[in-house]
Length: 403
Ligand SMILES: *Cc1c(COP(=O)(O)O)cnc(C)c1O
Image 1 (tube, rainbow, N blue to C red):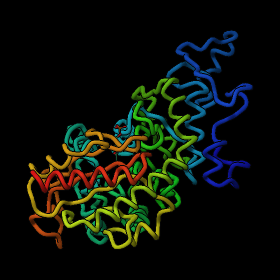
Image 2 (cartoon, rainbow, N blue to C red; image 1 turned 180 degrees about the vertical axis):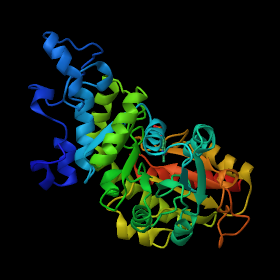
Image 3 (cartoon, rainbow, N blue to C red; image 1 turned 90 degrees about the horizontal axis):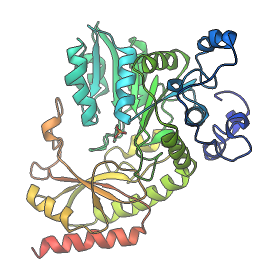
């Protein structure tokens, strides 16, 4: 329901109302889990007409979904201002791949921000290259450098802001405007902010991608991704996803819908906690730099304040000096932070940050940072009491000092 009375509602309310069409929910609050592969037709006339309406809401065959998936897609579309529709994918990586394959063809060039999520880079170096699509990386913070990197064959650009490891905030409106003017399709991995924190299409981006595994799922128990766009790009996304046979299970769609309803309060709480913890870390002698765009004075804060309406619990920090072994001892000493990939769940997580080997055009540590300060830690702040999390970090620093 991209149009209609929901347009006037605020995002907080759309989180609650989105996708809850009576014909999908019945008398219940939530749509039931419609387990369906076969859809039965009344008669031959209905069977013949069936495939003609290729849209969410029209029954055809399980691969095109049923009300549980349609409700989730519609609720996500309602959040993404400017979107005509949303495609669901079995993971965030599948959503990125789906978006890139929807717009790129052999012989064309993809420009990719150098802070992109590692599997996005792997796709570029792997399947895309094998299909004759070349990828050129650019400095996430260099708008003029991006413009200069565009060539005749450039067709699309993949942005990620903030970068999910190193937290660079890109000037997305400027980059998207250049892309549009030069005939490139702009795609953003908007997983960090979600549409609640950054209205990607309103800022000029063509396709907004999100890993629903993170904030939307929110409970570390499902994998899913989505991509939203205006009419032209939604049509391309849909066409490509259907050719690739992308579907999500109704059980997972129901879980994602459940997560979506509380997304706003969880993000607010995680943002407040992350900010308190980031401030505390910034005051510690063991910390060289806090990479948290929400923190005043931190890299990217000015652009974040200008363009974003919210944050989340994910940020990184760099230890002063030391080596990988010291950093690893620090992580091992933490008790409340689980060591594991992913983020955006109700529970706090930690992983090491070592971007140097994967960068193509930007050095790590970046200019202005001490060469010895290169060992990073990424925290995903969950819903625990931030005082307990700070106490945990404090005892881990103390354990380092005494080791
Ligand atoms: C996790 C992640 C993805 C991929 O999502 P999956 O659902 O794990 O496939 C994409 N982009 C970013 C920034 C991520 O952190």
